[in-house]
Image (tube, rainbow, N blue to C red; front, side):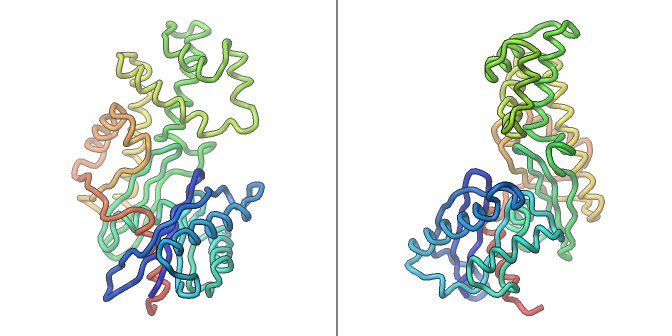
Length: 313
């Protein structure tokens, strides 16, 4: 059985073509394509189709195959909520683009493919902190639970966005005398090309200035914390506590007393001081949690979900 798994992000999409042989997946080809955006955004559907088409075409070329052999596919993309109308719409688009029966194609959130890739056939929790954040887990019976990550405008605490956002707030308090000034303020303002609080206010409301722009400021906040700026350390600790809170909620909902946990996302992997703060917060919130390496990546998880579509229910 030939199946395709997609990992679709805002900057790019990966596709992996595999064949199921005696219950094992053997990779035949890989390909890359453009990124996706929310389906309801301008050209959302066109970008989704282009991401699927281009990455699949590249994977098929590398495998020396045609899409006529494809039997099932799954894609993980940010913003696709489980059980939502958007999920049904994205799944239908995937099936149409690939010429598959709708029962043989499924679209879901990238956190779900990350979870299935990390823990294909066992219980575990994936904690993601990148530009955004989310926590999702599964028990040994396959029951899943998700906590937090309801978009940066509502629920971004624990993400790089959150760290950068709080850092910029901190800079305004420094500028107007509520706190002593610090080089962090100049660094943040220089990064944004601003020279006053009024300029910062105007900058953040410009079209296109969103979560990613705030998230890009997070490394400066972490560096200031490493240099001893206590308010910056407090920002890291607050975000870390939010991640631990989400992890505890998932572990409790699934009755996982000693959960295995995989961490994903740039904030966790590229900000060592934040990672230490998260480790400390998790140890306090869920003492029996054990960090571990994932069994596979999000493409592997998508392949497992695609394979599920071919199994008798």
